[in-house]
Every structure is written in C-alpha cells, then in structure tokens.
Length: 144
Image: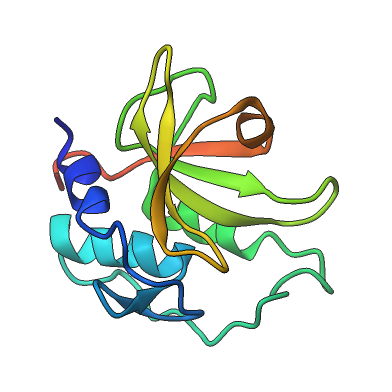
C-alpha cells in the first residue's frame, strides 16, 4: 500500500480546524496535506501564509493550484493511483480550494480529506465529488 495513503489514513478522526495541521488535534484540507508531507517527505518546502475561508476567491487567484505546481508533480486526470493529491473546485467558476488524497481507485474509489464541519474522513469518490476534480498530482518522486 502507498505510504501516502497509510499516512493519510492515520489522520482519520482528526477534527476539522481551520489553518491547523496537527494530527489528532485539528487540521483543514491543506493542513492534512502538509502533515502528510512532513511524515513522508520531511520539512515543509515553504511557509504557508495565514488564509481566510474565502481566500483567493475575491481575486479569482488559483493560489492553491499554483502552490501545488511548485511542489508536486502534475498528472493527467485519467492517470489515477492511490496516494494522488486531488484538487477540487467546490463551486462552478470558483477557485480550486479543496484537497484530498486518493485512497482507493477502481470500482469503489475513495479519498481522504478534512472536511469543514466534520473531521478527517475517507469518503467515497462519488460522481458529484469526481466531477469537481480539476487537477491531480503526485508527491515528488524519490521523496517517498
């Protein structure tokens, strides 16, 4: 099994807390990715600035996508593998601002994510979720 998936699943049950990234104490979707990076790769590659819940929306700036491109390897959307980082657009014409980790692919795909109002969960990657994916990334090769 992918080290990324194992690391992500170890965060399941961590409460949702905006701007946090502490396993068992609190995290948001970006914090989950940051925590997995620290566990599997090492120190975080850049400092994350403070961000609001509506960050990047007023400017229409794809800040999360740009950061992913700086540190992760882009993949074709059709090249699915467990451990992929999934970037979601939550609203049509909104900025992409939700992240998850592919847990399973195939007939019963899942993804692990920190979801506002919940905790870190592994959810079915149902059609409503799947259609929101705008980008897929892999952790840097040689790092995992």
